[in-house]
Amino acid sequence: MHVPSPPLLEVRELVKIFGPVRANDGISFSVRPGEVHALLGENGAGKSTLVKSLYGVHQPDSGEIVIDGAAVELPSPAAARQRGIGMVFQDMRLIPALPVWQNIALHLTDTPWVMRPKTLKARIAELSQRYGLAVHPDALVEHLSIGEWQRVELVKVLLGGLRLLILDEPTSVLTPQEVGGLFEVVDRLRADGAAIVIITHKLREVRQIADRVTVLRGGRTVLSDAEPAQLTDEQLITAMVGEPVAALERRSTDASDAASPDPAIVRLENVSIRRPDGALGLDGVSLEVFPGQILGVAGVAGSGQDELSETILGLRQPVAGTVALDGAELALPAVRQARQAGIVAVASDPVQDFVIPGMSVAEHAALWFAEGRFRFDTRRADTQLRTRNGTAQLRAVAGNRRMDRLSGGNIQRVLLTLALTSTCRVLVASYPTRGLDILTTERTRTLIKELCDAGVAVVLVSEDLDELLTLSDRIAVLSGGELTGVVPAATADRQRLGELMAGGVAA
Ligand SMILES: Nc1ncnc2c1ncn2[C@@H]1O[C@H](COP(=O)(O)OP(=O)(O)OP(=O)(O)O)[C@@H](O)[C@H]1O
Image 1 (spheres, rainbow, N blue to C red):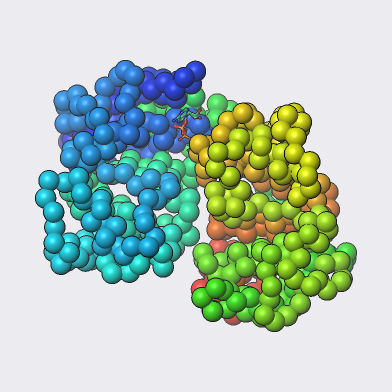
Image 2: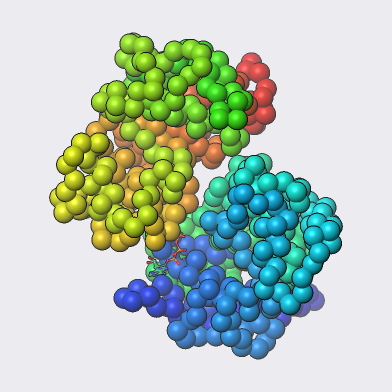
């Protein structure tokens, strides 16, 4: 008979309190060596707080962290690292101006030994090779993609002699291909006997990678150390949310629905956009966006999605081609005209483009409502935000919270509450459900669908192919800045989209 190995990590009745919030309220679960353990739960359920206690960032108020059968104190991340605990954070902490090896060397300063650059580079190369983490020690971090940043973080963690790896929503910023690569690394670590704790919102990923799963709700464990194969999706969702959540049906079932009788609101003709590095970010793209339709935009990261959105928002000046709004050609950039025409955006990188450090949620709402005019009334904005919260039901946090202290999911909820309740004719939504839990994701999709049903023209940029297939009327696929196809969602499938994303030619 197979006897399961004793746990490497046991968490017993862990409590962590922030002021009035019991972020962790008696959490218990365990992880064995050679096991991938998924932590599930809604935004704010307490997952990040829990893993930060495991990594020595937070000190629990009560409860025990037990490693190899003995209760331990983890007063700092350095103490956690000394016990072989490594963590890759949601917001990766590298210095862009330095090469990979120096970023890693900085991380090693708390170890009692110092490696010579040559030795360190050789170790990086060896680990990259062994775990399939393609990173070059001399590459400048600012030139790396998000997936590559993450690989550097993984190498950093692996160098310390890893026993327990904590991954906080590692896939929310990755393309489907990069997720595959990350999971291969996780598989190798598991085979080497490491224990892995992974936070995710995606059931598809739990099924793909996790041996066991623990679900948190409101700071408590509602399901502990369960085997995913023994549970249905509905059971997992009910554990997370407290009630079943119906997934949206695919919108378009008939390819002929995709033809719109109304004239296009936005029309791009042969538009080319140059990036700061001189390369073409968009290369001769022609597209139309119709009222009452959702145009999905698919592509691996950096294929021209941002350039396309920013062109429609009037932010970019094409080097060739024209952009027309309601049939009239625009002299770009034309931010004001785009705004006056009722174009509203959900930014692709809200932390960069939406969050203003030091300002409250209500102040952000006031800026949003002021729309560039001198009419800044925070108290009024707070009241309006509450009303919009009631309409959107995305459970955005209270107006007095500081925006830069919120989790990615909570920032996204505020942005979506503002954007999806604004009167608009065109909505450009980039990765709207990134970092959101299941309930908020479904609610966001419903709101986008309702806007479309009310006649809004929607451009939906997403890396989630299921989301694109469920919501879109047509899906435009970008590859290397070129449009490789525009297919009716009704006749598209993951494989076809994957071929076009890889640069295939539309049939
Ligand atoms: N440093 C802090 N100070 C005050 N409150 C905090 C702090 N960190 C977290 N919280 C609160 O604790 C609760 C749990 O937050 P936590 O970030 O652990 O949730 P989560 O499950 O990781 O959410 P998400 O899926 O959005 O990342 C939330 O109400 C959050 O606002």
